[in-house]
Amino acid sequence: MDTVTMENALVVGTGLIGASAALALNARGVTVHLRDADPAAVRIASSLGAGTVEAPQERVDLAVVAVPPALVPGVLVGLQADGVARHYTDVASVKAGPQQEALALACDTARYVGGHPMAGRERSGPLAARPDLFVGCNWVLTPTPDTDTDTLNSGLELVALCGAVPVVMEAVAHDRAVGLVSHAPHVVASLVAALLERADERAVRLAGSGVRDLTRIAAADPGLWVDILGANALVVADLLEELSEGMDDAVAGLRAMAATDEDKRDSGARTVENLLRRGQSGRIRIPAKRGMLPEQYETVTVVIGDQPGELARLFTDASRVGVNVEDVRLEHSAGQSTGLVHLSVARDLMDVLVAELRNREWRQS
Image (cartoon, rainbow, N blue to C red; front, side, top):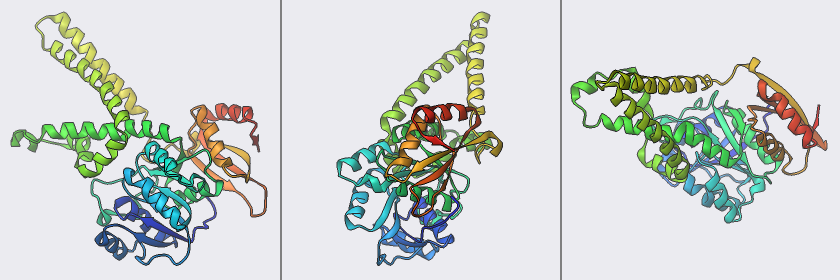
């Protein structure tokens, strides 16, 4: 986004993510008010420069709910009841369940957009917070069908102020995606690390960068991860079940490689080699840490009205054909009934998006 309009914000929850967001906002000139059920945590965050512990005297531009997924709906509804902010978002790592519960609690979803910054550290708490934690990282936004355009814009501005890259997805699609790229891998890393618990000390001392990299995320707070996995349990269970089938094949292949029969050994070797090649192929698909290069993007410009929910409808229509919006730039002047939305998408998906928008009667510029 080109224009920064956020003047103040309330961050509820001063753990790693909440405090890091507060530090980033404060560094960009936003007045940040901090709130946390733990008085010590909020004092530490404030002493580090994340913001003030003083309650806001007027309604803030944005409230950021940085609490565990299970607590998000209750905190969100309470904040809205108090009217503390014009717009609301959260940073929970699971979106569909909290979103559905918020709806059940009569949350004003027009003024709420779910969010999830894809960043973190093995350490937790405000002392681990960094203002640059989100720089270059994907930050998913999951608007509901009736999320107001101004609310989505506020979420996009938060992402921009934190130096992250916005990715707009439906909540259910987000949960499936993070189950694959984050939640299931965390369980796998923990299983591998657990093998080291009772291993011979001499064996553990041989550990190099390979096993360190593989098990790095297993060092994270187990209590926090129980909350995360519980909120996305069925998705993760399905992925681990699929993984277990591959593990069975690997075990069978490896045992065959140790057989005395040459044909069995050859068959086992082919099985294991196929597994390794599939792993290599999948690994290649992971984008570079900072995302794709600029030349791999194309920009699609769409004319959009200022009716509530229009921007959310645009992103929903894009997601119907499997197009992720990798970046967003908005052009809109006060008093004008329309504006321009510049959508950056993968080059090979541009034609698909253009055709879908035309079918949905979006006017393109």
